[in-house]
Image (cartoon, rainbow, N blue to C red; front, side):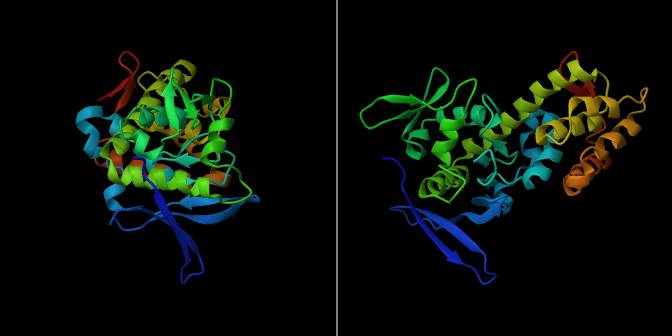
Length: 299
């Protein structure tokens, strides 16, 4: 039988409201779904809290993913401090989740691909009983058995509306979908594994594309990482990146140039990325270069 969640809320001593959920019919404690916020006139939820047991730790994935586990770490820190249940429902994406903040508004994008992997798990029917995966597309199944496709190569609007009906209010459906995702990641290790696998798969594919665009063979990992982070967040264009790394092989200068892209509006994020890279470099972890031949990083 599909999981049901009891919803509740309270106003904290700080004046901040918080939404909770609890698995119905269980003795599990209630958990935080998120906090209401107003953003550019939109109403939604955010959850940026961090719990050590649910924070991305690259060393846990070295055996499976080698250096790539560390390569995504600066972005993970900047996006969520590594929180597996980081979420927001207040911007144009309408639903963003995972420690890399995958966003639901991009057709065939990171969130769509990640969610399809979740739907392939046997337990998915307990969390999202109305959603099924068919022909690698997400469908809504009505009670009479008919299906409605929610996303395709051009649009994810129907899927976004399922997860979060509007940006005008915080609806029950929005709260339930968030509760499902937070509870799932807290109670199923496979959810965390899929987050990590999806993030590394994304950056591996991106590096092939960026190498083709920017000729990154033998380029230091720190330069490659900032390029990936810029494009992941969207704070700079390919043309700006190309200009920044046009330094006649002076990679330290290229690195510093890249860190200036978007610094007016995103200085704290850039500082987090830089500090994480510097720490990993000092530890002897990030002193690698990109190898086009194997789409990997080598000493």
